Image 1 (cartoon, helix red, strand yellow):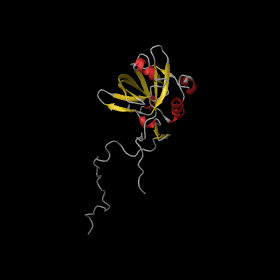
Image 2: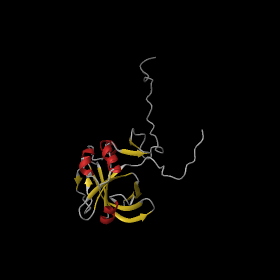
Image 3: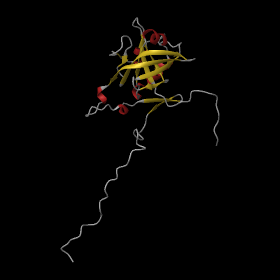
Image 4: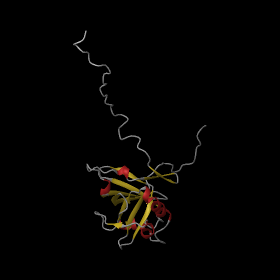
Length: 205
């Protein structure tokens, strides 16, 4: 079997399905689901989200220059889908999805979502009008992490939160761990082989 050639399109999957919360300067808030998001820089920490200008949240983000990327879990899958297909013009998504507005520690307007295990607070640095979507390039100003996922050594167990991925129209759980970063080049430690022979008894002939 060969491969088919298709016209150019967005086939980069899987993607994170995150819920973005934002607000305008008057205090109106909204949430929308974004799959076109990612990391662009480590130092300073920067991310992006791409949003259609006709989305209800677009002008809130543009006006306040703030948004929060809230990571989603299997428990939040319905909210993630609902907030991606319904408009905040018509319905209160916070109420419908039973989500709680939390205080962002570094932002003036945009709230965080309490039910999310991780809230990534962002301030917009620039807007790139690319076509169907405009890209908000933003600096991460703070990260809030749910303490209930901290282990006894203070390590945050992010992969135990039940994170979601979005792939070709479907929401998926991340499944089983297949390896850790750098495992393919990590040197194996050879453990000494225990001898199966009993030590000789010098008192015998």
